Amino acid sequence: MVKPKVLVTRRWPAAVEAQLSESFDTVLNTSDKPLGPEDFRAALSSCDAVLPTVTDSIGGEAMQMKSVQTRIIANYGVGYTHIDIAAANDLGITVTNTPDVLSECTADLAMTLLLMVARRAGEGEREIREGRWTGWRPTHLVGTKVSGKTLGIIGFGRIGQEVARRAHHGFGMKIVVQNRSKVAPEVLAQCNATQVDDIETLMPLCDFVSLHCPGGAENRNMINSARLELMKPDAFLINTARGEVIDELALSQALWFNTIGGAALDVFVGEPRINPALLDCDRLVMLPHLGSATHESREAMGFRVIDNLRDFFEGREPRDRVN
Ligand code: DGY
Image: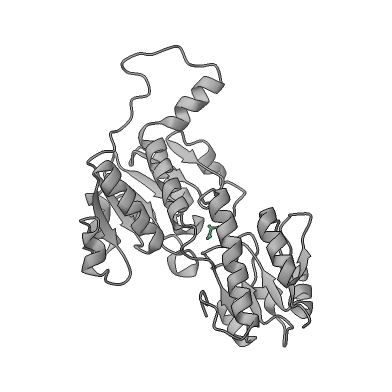
């Protein structure tokens, strides 16, 4: 049987690339730089499968084609708002993602950010490296206690639930949830969580708010100045979801004018470019989109893509089909 031809848009863990090339005619982007619309048009015309990541925008110009060779876009990652699903549907392309296998590690990173911003860890690290630490004193870099505080979780899917578990069972936090659909009572009960109807209700109740909803047009600027104003003046905002969910200018103003306690971001609008307004904010922790960046998750994501491809090309329904 002729092996299906698949384009891998970025370098993957070596073990995954090796397993992929056993079953598929694999085209690797050895430069490991993001591809452009022309590259995607060429790939859609010549490859049976395209395997993108969050850095690949597959929509608009890249998908304005009448017919394509590609039958499946198997995304390496759970979020897929960088793929134009309506255009994929029009072209008869199946789209899959990689849920579950990165939920724990992304939740770990959300907790890392929460702890870092509450305990001023980023500021402390910068102080040592820049030779500014003058020694222990009772009033030095005093942060906020995490245990027993209230954590608001916006978006209660797999990752949001993992965060709730860690925060509730590990730190005794009270959990308040806002989710677009009603969460099953037994799921809420696992963390003694309460669901509220809207973000306006959640914001004033919480000492920490962590975002776990999808990105895309639907949730763009969901956290805007009006909603930031509803937060307690010493509350913290954590984002491991997608940059566009927060109005970054409004957030930088909230940080500048001390209307919230601080923020911690792993994702940014137009990353890797960082909005200059954010760069000057002190009470802000920033990480370079590390949510799923563990050896375990990155390998598991690759193997999950391979499972989806095998199912698809062997005539079975891929388990992670999203369209
Ligand atoms: C995801 O899986 O969505 C991560 O953000 C990396 O793309």
